[in-house]
Image 1 (cartoon, helix red, strand yellow):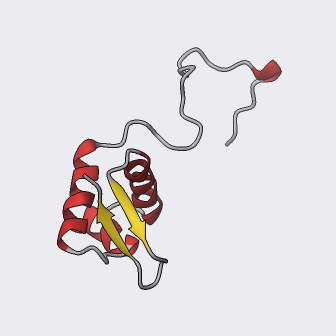
Image 2 (cartoon, one colour; image 1 turned 60 degrees about the vertical axis):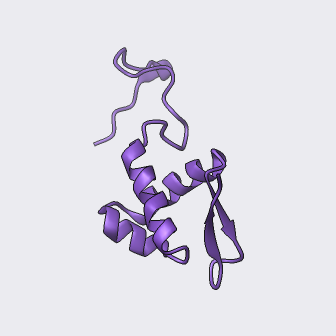
Length: 88
């Protein structure tokens, strides 16, 4: 069921600063685990990370994008044959 609000009225309980696409509330522990898994296997796949972390591939992809944005992780090469590099 979809609720439609007339005149674009948003309920009071929705914060004004809701992220558009990438959530800011990514658990730091999960990002640290991603870095640890990459440290032990720099060719690890998103699918493997999602299985180990028990989250979706999409969630892992968002976490990795945030790590890349923060200059903590970098992808060297393409999807096939490439590898991850931890920065810093």
